[in-house]
Length: 236
Image (cartoon, rainbow, N blue to C red; front, side):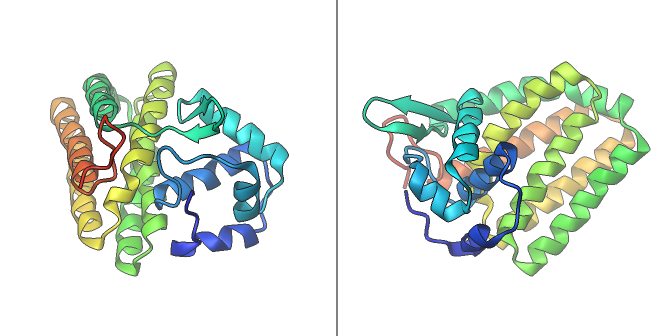
């Protein structure tokens, strides 16, 4: 597990936060999004506790929560291991997310409130500022929130719960592949088009745009070697 403290992650240990399990989960997610934790890494309690500046009790709870979400698996003689999707599973995640977008997109354009649309627009504007500032981790976190806000705008609690879990796995798998300004600018432009389609109220076009957006993120992650092949080796 290579946790070098790059990209501002070393400051996590200095942050004054309440070490509740959900917050610890977010801190681990940040390590994944920046590539300091990668698929197959052991989640060693002492190492994570030192880096994150939290005690082992909330850390253990956080690892259990990640396991329940399918992101951590237990291996004999290896303990808890981070389990990010390989190329096959990532492709399946994208496929299933596409099916969900087909259903959600129509609900989004029919049910979205002005407050929800304003929130999505705020996230888009913030991502533009973060991209210009070169804040890669900040951009990735708001990017995740942008997509979650669209899901929430379907105003279907059951569908949201299913889609949020898939979206989190997709985010953690693909986030590091977007860590260049050029890729983030391209993604921001696609987000602008998605917002325009929501305003136009075209559910079919929205589903298509969201699916294309997710598919491009998958292609980028695979091309940059972020997603592992089925043999467990990164694509070069």
